Length: 470
Image (cartoon, rainbow, N blue to C red; front, side):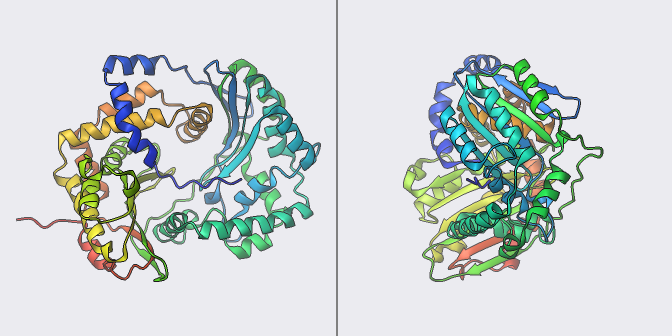
């Protein structure tokens, strides 16, 4: 049920398919025409502060969902895990629908109901036929306002979440990113895991769930987003009837500042075959002007997987070195953004003996970004970033997710042609400037799991974050 969000901005499939899409849009005029013909996103704010945003593509299907500005960052040490617990409880029955009734109603519509929790957002969404959008909105509204939160269901979900925690612990990429957040944002809400510690899962009760809903599920912190075959005026009417009674928040949501700490955590386990390592510096928030140049820099570093091949002929220096010198099995750069901070870095998987060489190549590439990156590389990265941007908006669900997230983060949906212009405006100088600002001579956060004996100690890693040149 729960889709974990790592914020890795560049997935491997998009990266590998990038060249094909660039060829498809090789004419600037064709790309511009495509971007301008994308339906506009309409936004309406209800009297209670709830925002309704939709994009009508005229499709026969639609995705509609509720994006809530509350996640594990809105928790404290005592109730860490309650947002994710609520996500599980959402489908366990409401005041007027039992769990069986809810499941049958959704299945009879041929729809799909799902939810996920991230560090800053909780999302409930449904995929259905266009004609069933009114029913989907009514079901979603019922779920977030009238969930029964029965004691028997809470007890049953405890074991489900504990089992899910075991599954997460077997996914080493998830484990590394949780450790990375824990060390980078130690002592702050962003350092907490989304699922929460075991002791919290075993103690969370109805009072904790109810208190979280009453505190954070306010109309002004919720966006009803939809994409596909959906009429905006009809959606606004549905929102008024189903969600108009939600309480408006008197005070704006407070964002607890989360301090970044350059530090490391290592979990050495020589029984594992491969070392899993993430290294990151503090990035910027969603609305910061440096975000687009950092995205270009992130795309420039790129991603690579040994199983995909093509490394020796890849334009990415790091991918080429990884393939030719057998440095790693895979790597992917990431640019994870939050409201006021972020993590910009790289995650790689390598043989135990290659930890030092791989890290040396990563940091060499970072230093090159700061000092010697070329215009041709930046142009390639900008083209690939625009390509990935289009690839990731394939279908009603990713478009709906993009709408909901952007309304929460920016209070508007940035049109694709505007985003394209902002990417095009990034120069070599911009990339060097943000690299110098965020990477050069900065203390990184490091998380490593597995046989990591050969990973250099933190002082050596820190000393490689700058170059002494004569």
